[in-house]
Image (cartoon, rainbow, N blue to C red; front, side):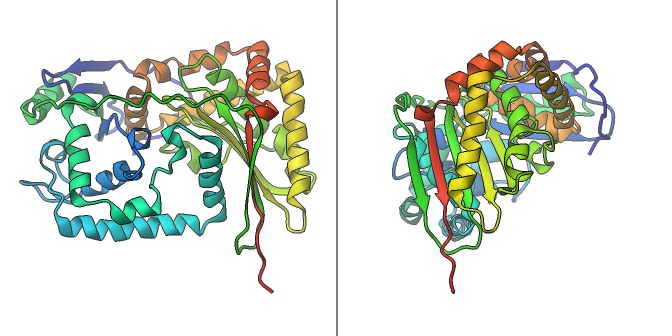
Length: 401
């Protein structure tokens, strides 16, 4: 890993080229250490899955690391694009692995509540399906389902190859052309067209299951990463629960600075919750802003919910202060520096944002955050944090005597 940069520095230029077969190539030279990070991103995921095939994208990811026609596992990305094997025995062994992974997640009350909250908040859009899929689909999907999905979506004209590190752009591009240029393009299926209808009333769910700890989640339909309200919402979340970065690969590994955040003071300092957190993910299409709290032992979920909703209602009515805006901007600036602290993190950001929106979005993020105003935050809070726009989920544990 390259040394961490504690202060911001100008980003190196990103070279973007498209091969004749449609493969987009992004190269960024970073010569601080003799390392390079290579990622291949495909524009496909759970939002492209239909009922009966939920979880197929995740399963295909597993299969693409099970060896190819010419090269064994974990080598040369071009072979994975063109010649993955999908041996029936490997498909079956991965079925067992993935179902075990799903069941492990369902045994985590916080993760289970998050899954069920999302499925309740969304009625039409495929974002309602868990990335890992529903159990019955995983039990019935066939090798032909997997391989057919792979051949449809894992083609050069649906992919972005990202290379960041101690490389020469010109020589690297020639090497990419040799490895990937002969792979034929495919006919990419039409994208999902479903638009989630506007929610017109509060939704609720309660999970009653064996456990020792009570959890609360409140999810609001929230803007996509290209919506003008996304960055004001990012600032709002920093005020409410502490600033997070935009790197899904690394940002959530380090807790946000939240000792002075509004919800920490309203819930944790008052003894109602042992922890509180917020999540606003950069997504291609509108997803959720979710606030989560872990109830303190002996505190009723109704009391935690009342305090949480009161704090959210206040910010929806009144917005934030100039002092809070300045602090949130500074914290987010620091988190974005952390997001780019290695060639791996940089490559992840370039590939992820090119896949969902375009690299310009992440390149412009620091300037966009600096430009956010208190009025923009107030408008976003009023638009998003409406009672009719929220889904409330409880995990109310059944305690065995």
